[in-house]
Picture 1 (tube, chains in turn cyan, green):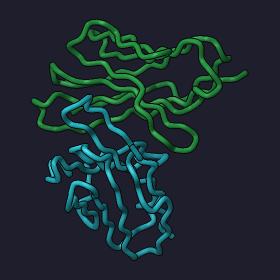
Picture 2 (cartoon, helix red, strand yellow):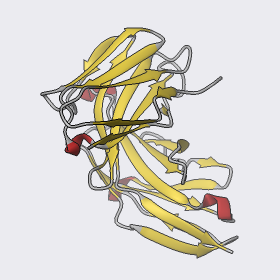
Picture 3 (cartoon, chains in turn yellow, orange):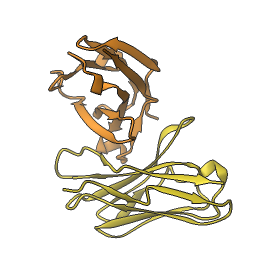
Picture 4 (tube, one colour):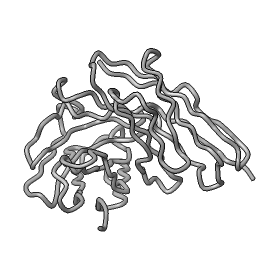
Length: 114
Length: 117
């Protein structure tokens, strides 16, 4: 079991560029969550999918951020026209919904917007 | 709305002693779930222990145990026989029951634990 895999580990973009972050959940887990972590805001919920369907995106900034889960094996978080305030560690987590319902986190992607 | 508060920003202890980290929460749900996670210096976030609100018995896993005081909306984490490698940031988190329609896990701000030799 490789755990939740996030790529890339680090990403540097210029202001206004697009950033796409990838997440591969643990095989067999039916839900994927995205969180953002900053020093100031801490761990913030962004969105989650269950059985690939978007369930709750109440934490997503309404503009520029979008997430998809096209199949069971990966999810993406896309940020268009990145801004310096988007700099953060973006964490993906997956859950075995029928099991202990515990979040297993990936190592995160550190996004730096210059 | 649910809220999780950790007032201790940092704690230092000598190894092999016992430490307690505080956490209080707010929820309107009668059914909810409480968790503690640990974030190591490398950034890895690891699940430690969980308490379901309907269970009266405090959860225990290895050298981690919980002090669940439901009337006070409090869920303290107790680490006995601390080790240097327990040094990390500890997060308390809460998920409301399915009746709320959301599976969001809301985190507290974290407590930095430093275990000294």
